[in-house]
Each structure stands twice: as structure tokens, then as C-alpha cells.
Image (cartoon, rainbow, N blue to C red; front, side):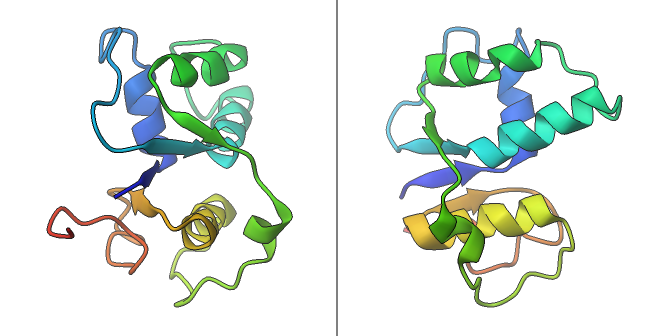
Length: 124
């Protein structure tokens, strides 16, 4: 099953000492440009201490074999069903990307893990 990484998982794989030179083995792994946008905003606001320059995020993720998904009109206008409990617009957008693209969101965010669009290890 193809998956979309939540922003906190994107940050985890950007650590220089974690997964250096690694590539995803079997299933397609996607990252929304929305996650890069969120990370860059938080880094510029001083809310996030990045270990890599924001300008290198896209290249680094591509190097890990992640497919980068643009944000489209279909993503921003999608009616996510059911509506998530979170008020975070980036979380809502990531769920919309999953719904439109037929993906599952890999997350440990407590407001998202029980959503039907979230990935669960027990799914086939």
C-alpha cells in the first residue's frame, strides 16, 4: 500500500545520521510539498531547529527515493470524510492528499492515528 509521510516522519528521515544513503525498499513512499512548506515555515519562525537547510529538503527527500507530490486544486478542495478532529490546516491538507491520491497517512499524531485515512500496520 502506498503511503504519505506526515511531517514529523519527514523530519525523522532528514537527520543526517538516520538512514544515510538508505532508500525505501518496497512500497512507494510519498511526501507532500505541503510538509516541506510546513517545515520551512516553522524553521523560519524559530519553532523548529532543522539539521539541514530548508532549501535542500526536496533534493534530500528525492535522494531517499521519496516521491514528492505537488499540492493541487483537487487536494485543497477535497471534502475529507470523516472530517478530522485536528484544527491544523497542514494535517487536514495531508489527509485530503491521501483521499485524492489513494494513499494512507503514516503518522503518530494522536488526533490523526484513528482516522480511516491513517495507515495501520494491520492493514493489508
